[in-house]
Amino acid sequence: MQTMLLDCATWDLAVDAAGNIAVASAPYAVAQNVACAVRVFLGECWYNTSLGLPYLSNILGRTQSAALFRADVEQTALSVQGVTHATCVLTGISPQRRLSGVIQLTLADGSQTSVSL
Image (cartoon, rainbow, N blue to C red):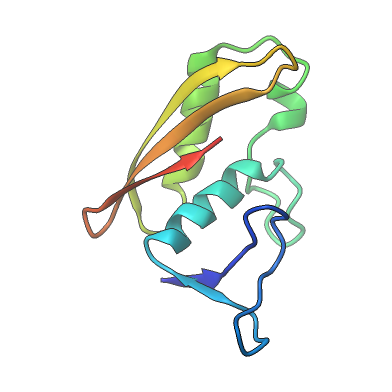
C-alpha cells in the first residue's frame, strides 16, 4: 500500500528530493491513513460524506462517554485498508481541553504501529 506523504507539522503534501510529490509505503502509509480518517469530520469529504467521526453532532461541545469516543475512533481506524485490529487508549485531557492518547494498530501483515491523537 502506498499513499501521498504528508508533512507531519503542516499536514500538507511533501515533496521528494526530485521535487515530485512524495509517497509513503506501509506501515507508515497505513498509520497516516488512520490519522487522516480520525481527523475527518463526518460529512466533510465531498465524494463520500459517510466518512469521518461525528465531531459536530456527537463529540465537540457535547457530553459523551470516553468509551463511546474510543469505540468511534476504533471503528474508524478499522475502516482503513490494512488495519485488522485497533485499540484507542486515551491518556489525558489538558487544561485547554486537548485530548491526548494513541491508537494502537495491528496491520494485515501482523506488524504493529501506533498513531497519536
